[in-house]
Image 1 (cartoon, one colour):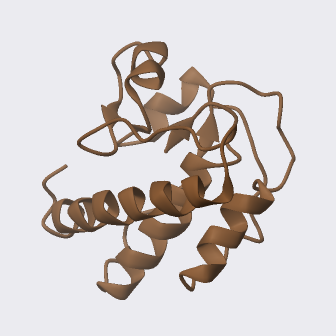
Image 2 (cartoon, one colour):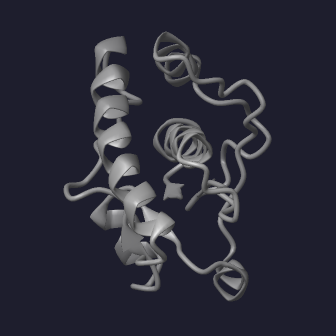
Length: 136
């Protein structure tokens, strides 16, 4: 999963998709996240993102941001971009995570993180269905 700084959307997506895959008994998929930029590398998830996850029963406390490296394409079967800007930045070698762009909640209020999380959960459910039947 890839977003801008790897402190909001993509780590939320990573935590949710990993949990939903485990719940569905899909244990042969590794889920990671990163950002197109490295300005937050080593930082934990945005506290508002972590709080939104906690409110829904997820744990994002172990996350540390990192920057995506194009060399990783060779090691990954699927790279999911959180919005069309990230998709373009990844040179078309990725796919969109959700049907619509996942908006960046970083500059908004706390409620925006809950809205983004709801969108992420819906998209994660769809990916669980695809990945459990090997249909990415």
